[in-house]
Length: 339
Image (cartoon, rainbow, N blue to C red):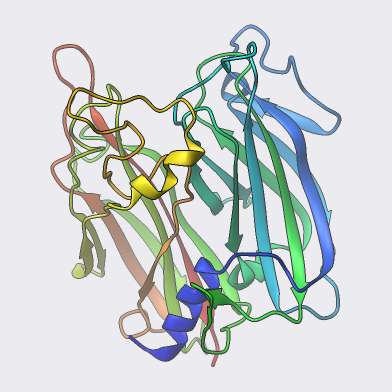
């Protein structure tokens, strides 16, 4: 792997307290996420709108970056709503994210996560490469896949950090790549299902600007099923990406380290096989942790000019007689550098 790609991966993984936060832009503060068809805006605060009966919260904020910064950090905290002294309103693990709405283009995910089983979690993601999108009026969308009301509360902010290099597992990495020269939203899909993919992979036409020397795809993915059994949550499937008809990436998202997050999951339960529900390995995610993007170097295949990208997940579990099925949450954006 090229050194600059490794550095970008370190940027994405970096976390921890900032050395000097030159500017913090608050977006959501104790914003409620819930599901109530008759009254989606029951908990709305000033400047906030809702979609999907309260499961998506939107707010537009003007971002004015400081003159000097080294990193941009997206920071989200997700909090359950107490029901009584011993329970919360939603004790389950839920898919969630914070993304940026781009006019005329797919949304760009900033932070992708899974809530814990009824526990509070905080996640940070380095989004320095997305700097071209994080200026001026920015519409942020928060999402929690909740089906009760009330459900969860969220805090979210963007921090511009000075005097801090990215750190991966406590070891300073190679120098950061820094902001991309351009960012191209490519795909945002809540549910790749057998029906969605029935006619084949999803194709997207893109144009790489003249003068581009480096191109990286920022690809988020997690596999799920509507009944919590087997495919596609506990049986991973091949994710396949092609450029102009040639396969450039094939992998099976998988996480086998979920046990380490058990303490974040106060409402996890132990099954008859001795495992706790939070401990099982899954298709690219763990309850209570964020889902980092996969960074794919496409510099050798995406020269300046027009191209066609395609995305596929093979053998997604079809809908059964009870109406349950597998599905995949997928998004992608291209990052480009002129040198």
